[in-house]
Image (cartoon, rainbow, N blue to C red):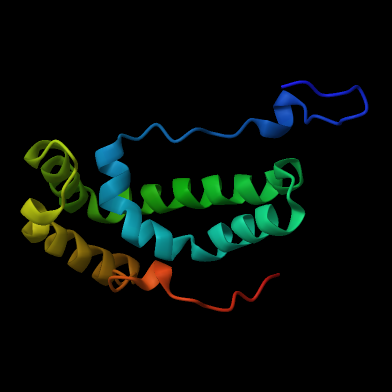
Length: 137
């Protein structure tokens, strides 16, 4: 990609955040609860990307999403580590395409733990596809 000298590119220090070093199975296992936990930060980021049409203007919103995700997985680790590990291992090893159908029992145990200890209910199927009004900051 070619850019002219008058285009401001952010410094590397502006872009540097702690990375999430997680496998696909771990992300799949936490995805529904993560989406609910970080819904506001995700909506702010996506709204910024849509309205600004320039990802450079949304760096802070992107950092907020990453920070929220880190916070979520730290809380899961503290509250429901064994249940989460069983669920993510099932997803990882039960099929080649991370299918959830073989893991409904471990999912139920994890869902119950997250509800009891973190007060996050697993969203209903289709929740993230529903139209909603986002109250921005």
